[in-house]
Image (cartoon, rainbow, N blue to C red; front, side, top):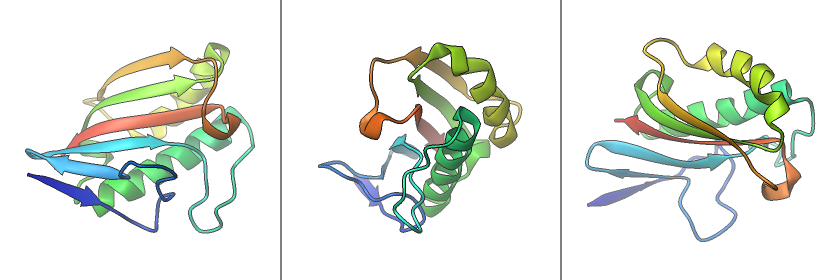
Length: 125
């Protein structure tokens, strides 16, 4: 059985998908981009600014699902430019502590709204 997670503390889904879904004790969080959920405004700052907004959104979504960044087991980081990896990684370390989640990080040709970063996550509930 699946449970849809919705919260106003993370950007609303902008298509036919859920912000997150809980299934079999796992939370599958859709990719978050740097939109401020309070204003709906896109954060167009540096990679650090955008990564912090993305991870704040992810934290809010995880908390709405009854979990936290400490229970994340896997993330995927999508970067517009792999040259931003080290700067993204420094911010990522502000939100995730040992034992760190498994992770993939890939450079992509384009992201929604032409942002610099998107992150999705799987967590234990």
